[in-house]
Amino acid sequence: MPVNDTLDAFVSHGHFELAPTNAGPLDGLSFALKDLFHVAGVPTAAGSPAWLASHPVPSETAPVVDMLRGAGARLVGKTHTDEMAWSLNGENHHYGTPINPAARERIPGGSSSGSAAATAGGLVDFAIGSDTGGSVRLPASYCGLIGLRPTHGRIPIDGAVPLAPSYDTVGWFARDGETFAKVGAVLLGGVQSMPAPRLLLARDLFEAAGPQVTAALAPALARITALYGAAEEVDVAHGALPHWRNAFRVLQSADAWAAHADWVRTAQPDFGPGVKERFAAAATLDPTDVAEARALRDEVRARIDALLGGDGILLLPTAPGIAPLRGTPLADLEAFRARAIELLCLSGHAGTPQISLPLATLDGCPLGLSAMAPRGKDEMLLALARALG
Image (cartoon, helix red, strand yellow):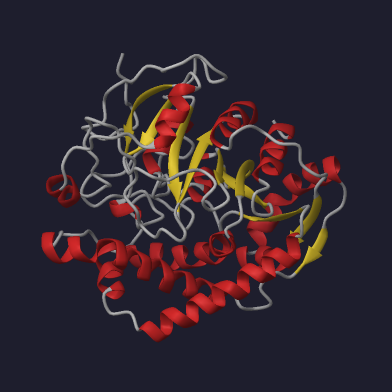
């Protein structure tokens, strides 16, 4: 039976159901799929009417869908995404805004907005999104969910419309740690044993998030240190967060333009606010700026690697605050987005896994605490989610 979509989470062409192809560890669980991933015989819009109109219906299905159905899960449709997945808000100029079940007057976050809404509202047991600059982690924080950006390249993202391939990852949402870990075991190829974690506390990132966020997350930090021992306080960026954010902006834009320049020139899509300006800026990037940003990304990666070693878990705020109100002026959203990217870009630059955990509230709204692990040590974060329930 089709999902009763009371949250505007599903796209109009995405109401369908595909049964499991085998029995397995996900027996009895339903999931939704961000409308960035292809399903044979079902259109992909990528949040853009122009993309929908200019591309044929896919004839092949993304591997992530086959993996989940092969493990016993039932796919119940495709969910809204921000236009071309290039936003963090969840407000699509063409298709509207899914409802955030945890804070109905506030945005759900993007670009995996529909997947987050469907999971938070109980329409599905879990949902697939993508995370390039925070598009799983930020909606997870806004909607009170567990959400993971995995190690870059660990889960195949074939069969998806790209945004910035050097940052794009498959991610997922769930409401509880046990379900989340079950899905992770399937997507990551089985849960391996991991070393006991060494906790690190990102002092400068908490300062960047501000005193209200820091105070709200303090009890969550206490819960984790009670399980794993005291955390060592570290400075991650040494004042360079704005430079790291700008390098992400440049490299994401360069990737997006390389992926879509021909289509943009040919189709001349009528992009919505924010996305329009980002594509326009991407078309005029200076190659020198791109080269400098790549060099800085290498420096960030080396810095994060040195901090984490083989057993470190870095604790940091997922976001600089709770979800903004629906209808917040674009200029205010862009300012908040810039602050958020300062916190979210680290794992993108380093290629490391990062999980957002729904461990706090602020002003009655969800607020996530993040944990980052070394590349390839995603299982450390699954274990943390399971331990915290």
